[in-house]
Amino acid sequence: MAKNHATLNKIGGAHTTIIGGRRGMKLIDIIIGHPEVKRIVPSVIVVKGNAVAGGAISGKVLRSDPRGNIRMIITHGTAVQEIRIITTVGDNEEGSRLVNELNAILFGDQEYV
Image 1 (cartoon, rainbow, N blue to C red):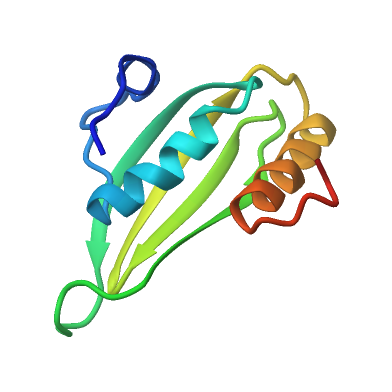
Image 2 (cartoon, one colour; image 1 turned 60 degrees about the horizontal axis):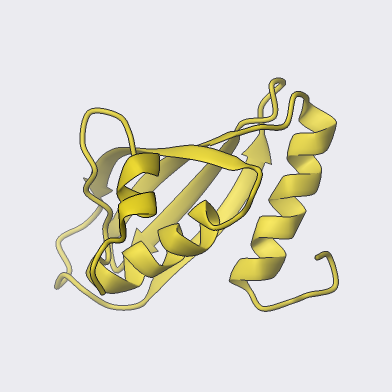
């Protein structure tokens, strides 16, 4: 999957590496596609243990800060990466609503959307 222009413009920070290759970028594309997401900022990748690289990839949106920005965790085998999601919402309550919406989209549960 090639990164589209809109995706590249919304990834910021010190680096743009996302763990999981194409599958990791697919998760990011889903998040970036939400109209209330302005930008994502990937953090460093942490590898725990010395198992073989690869394996299942998963992502979960965790919580909102007081300004409505969100934290997401992506795991791929033994690697973990935190993603900061910068949003257009202005407070923790709206951020919590967005957490539920994004998790519903990621897990295919349209009950919240």
